[in-house]
Length: 550
Image (cartoon, rainbow, N blue to C red; front, side, top):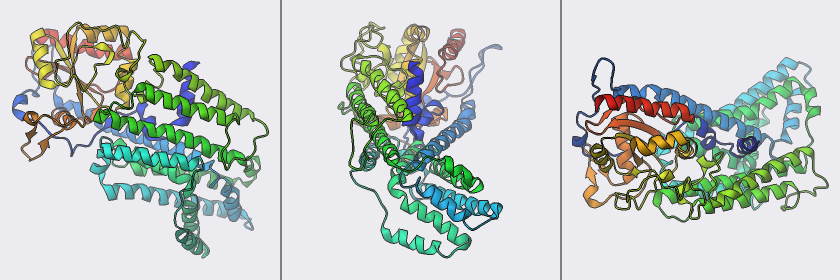
């Protein structure tokens, strides 16, 4: 029941691809920004060799086989997020009242149902074209490389935080985001011409007039589609969004009698807008958390994040119960059944988060929270007191910047970890991860905590965690220039380029099992796998190969 409530709330709350993709795709990073270290230490490390007739080391070229499917999954997540966002926008006070008026325009005085439907269908297609062109324009203006860079750029993440904060304030009634009235008037004039061109400009007028309601949703959608890293992400997201807007117009034009079953416009439309405003505020905090982690500000730890979410969702629950009222709200004389159900879900989710302030893992939302290692006051022995290794790790490279999850024996530098594993004669697991990687946190909180997986990670492997989005500047002696003139200046860019060039992947999490002696890949690397049993089988398969070749 607990998981059902949490998942139901998240399915409503996180309408946009960053969260939708957490179940389907890994975090993608910019390839053009990635910079590589001196290649001499990696010479001849990637060529696959056969040790005997029964044991084969996996060729690196096979790593890219699943790349296309990951991109497809990512695009589907973006489309799904856009579709949900479009249906949410349909219930906004700027659009919903226009639905019966627009449909009546196509059906009034026209006894030919097929002609009415074709006109409404063209109207819907026009809406789709307008929004898809907007998505394509974002990619064309910024370029795919620039879009990918947004996911790890601290300045842009902070800008997105401020932008979503403004969107949330707008939905709560502080002000309205609107386009110049001259644009609306010009489109409205052209829509009076009639014909196909007139219908198209009617759709354009709808897009402009409803911008105060759809703008924040579109902005959030484009931000998430852009930072996801998929080239066609913004266009696919806009297609899903516009499809959700267009479908009702065509369907009601075909079945106008169904309009009678629709709820009447009223104060509930503004309630939808206010609820989305609370969700925008909660959504914005994820971007602020990304910046805080990447730059090691240490201002926005897990407790602070949870405290803010508890307050935001708590206020949302009180609003749904009518205990809080904003300026544009009408008087709430009674609670509807649907509104009561939503209040129950929101308040239950709020109560669910409270134990997290003292270290409860909150596995259902752990992927969206700052890492458990940022928790200052943690009563959970799995994450705090039960330290699984006895070695002093304080002197290890970058130990002051990163914290090992679950108290595991983790290295944060490639060479240091490899050298240690060689002396211990243990298999290496390279974990390409990131501060902003939702799936990485989910793996650590839901899979690595499995007692069998954790036992294996503690006793049978040396973990090297490489953060590909860290913005800490390397020491002068560690900075290098690649053959193509790129400077290795940041920790994150160093490990990003290592992953992209050596393993032909730029997604996280990405797990590579290697032999530290000859630095050969033992089996095909693996991305996120939320089934602890299959993930453990993967680890054991790598160990079996390692034991045969070491």
